[in-house]
Length: 226
Image (cartoon, rainbow, N blue to C red; front, side):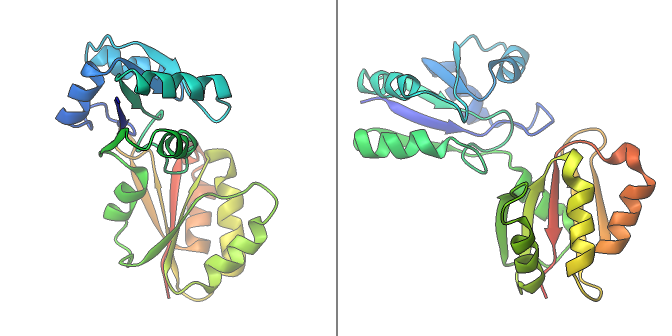
């Protein structure tokens, strides 16, 4: 049986990749990635010639079958996402679940590295010894319920948000959070314009309202516990 390597890739700065990850990417027979163009830039930067194939949320049954067949042949198969650690708010868990069910003797190994979640928590300066991670919030159904849960939670709550929905999320937080409970928005992590904006929900909303040029890049939003 082969080896299925789940490899974390940089979330911005291409230097944020481990020596082990680089070795595994070079030694692999194939790399399945969310977007071959994005992964191609990383591989080109490190002069890695391993072939790539697309694997995303719309992956077909035929793609799953191909991965299983490669592993049965003893190949080293790698899974990456566009940025960060696969299967964290990412559809990769589906193929891992399939491999564990269909080929229980295959070695599935974690090649750890960058994660927007842990990076944001490490620099936010908020009390987050206990936290709940919500991933990307739903666009419509259940969204209001989640914000009420965030408001009621004694633990810190963390979620991802895209730039075009950031203001809507912050506006919702201004309606449900009371007192001086703090919020942090970490954006452009590991990149040139990395920033963390902290304050009450009203203060953070006001900041981005007055700095619309900074409403860009994927964001991690942290709501401090009570």
